[in-house]
Each structure stands twice: as C-alpha cells, then as structure tokens.
Length: 395
Image (tube, rainbow, N blue to C red; front, side):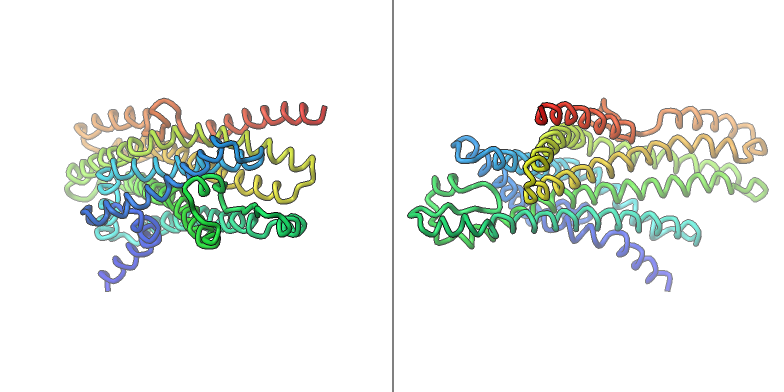
C-alpha cells in the first residue's frame, strides 16, 4: 500500500514535466543514450528554423514594420528555446541529481505532514506549468490563425492579381521562394510552421516548467527542514546523531540549490536581456495599435507581452521565494530549543546561522539576482521608456 502511494506521489509530481521534456531530449531521469541525443538535435534543428527564416526575411527586405517586429519576436523566442535546450543538456548532471534526489525524497518520507508539504509544492508546480504552457499554446494557435484568416478585401484583390501574396504563420515568404518551395505546398508549409511554433513553446515553457518544478521541490524540502529544527526533540536518545543528520541535510539542500542556480545562470541572463527588449518593442507596437484602432495588432502584442511577463514573473517569484526560504533556516534554528542541546552541537549552530545569511540565489550571469526587486526594476524601466514613446507618438 505504501509502495503504491510512493508511486502515485512521484507520478503526480513528475509525469507532466516528463511529457513536456522527454520528446525534446532533456528529461533528467531518461537514459542519456544516442536516442535522447537525436531527439534533442531534432528539436534544436526545428527551432533553428524559427530563427533562420525570419532573419532571411528581414535581410531580404520583404517585410513591413509590423512583420519586422513579429520576426524579431520569433527570433528571440527561437534563440531562447535553443539556449534552454542546449544548456539543460550541458548541465544534465545537475538536473539529474536534483530530480533523482526528489524521487528519493518521495520514497523515503514517512511523516504525513511532511508528505502533505511535498504534495502542496508539487501542486503549485503543476499549476504554474499548466498556466504557462497552455497560455503559450493558445497564443501560438491564435498567432498562426491570423495570417490564414486574413482580410476579405485583401483576398478579393489578390484573386485578380497574377501573383498572390501568401501569408504564413511566421514571416517566411521570400525565404521559401529563395529555396524554391512551390506555392502548391502552402498548406503543408503552414502546418509545418505551426508545429515548429508549438515545439518552440514547448522548449521555452516546458524547460521553464521543468526547472521551476524542481526548484519548488527544493523549497519544500527547506520548509520541511525548518519544521524539523522546530520540532526537534532533545529528550529522546541519539541527540547528536539526529541533529548532525539535520545539519548534513542542510548542507545537501544548499548543494542541490547551487547546482540549479549554476544550470540556469546563463539562460536567465539571456531571458532577462531579450525579454526586456521585447517588452519595450511589443509595448510600443501595442501603443501604435491603440492609436490606429488595429484590433489584430493589439491582440498579438497583448499575447506576446503576457507570455514574456509571465516568464519573468514566475522566475522572479520562485527566485525570491528560494532566497527567503534559505535565509529563514537560521531564524528557525534560533527559535528551536538549541539551548538544551549539548555544547558541541551549539557550536555548530553558529556556523549554520552564519551560512544562512548568504543564501543561495538564482542569478543571471552570476551577477544579477533574479527576484521580485529585479522584476519591478525591469517593469519600471520598460514603462518609463514606453511613456516617452507614447508622448512622441501623440505629439
């Protein structure tokens, strides 16, 4: 019965993220063989298309201002997807050790209250993943349907023309003509580009969900550790061994958190940099759409803004929460009955409290702390920039 419960807990905490990341070859608990490498290479090559085709469109001068913005947005999304997939393969050992540790946590936990804490954090991870991935898929569907629906008047005018201007889910008309792709394959190309967009969303938000889920699990383990310090019983036997086990557990969680921070450092740097640029570009496009009463452009800009703001919000919230959980370890130790412990243990407590004053933090490029303060700073800068542009547009 207990074995079945363990299996159900592990499936509840990990199955959605396995379904998202196994097809692209970055699932940490997979067998890292030639087949997983092939899946990763195929996913990376498909995402490269979303970078190459819009870049060629801009270089050939076949796009207007609106399509240029769409091309830049798609290029940034493709770059982020490729970087996340490659980095998670490079730092596969870090993710594998963390997910392996999480699996062992579910297999070894016996306290019902602690198990409930782990389930709660797993539930939060599932909710965040569902919201991010589903919203991005919905945005891609709307984004892909807009060029196909088109404008009736334009379609009627195009029927009389010898050269029909075809619109694709992503700007790629001139690039496809350059490669000699016949117009008779229009529907097949549209379907292929739609699949590439879906794959790019999976590589972006799927990898985000994979990382955020295990980071929340580490936060849950830190919360359990804090509860263990508070509930520590000094009257029972083997006080030294049990308290030293908690100290070792603290060191182990710090090690796991450091591995996660190292794995995501460069990705976060590019995420902050590209997201900040896109927020300004798409925000300006949204202002122009409001001025021209262009509902289609407003909808596209709004969806892109929401998608990137969601990414920044979730990373900032989880980074801030991880930092606060690590800092509170020293506070909870101080609130425990440490004064009843043997003298040799109270000496170790000082070092734990000192260590908690320098908690593990998610950092972009190992120099920008990703937390709510950073998030608010990015928002303030972007809004200030957009306010200046709005005044310029109205004057």
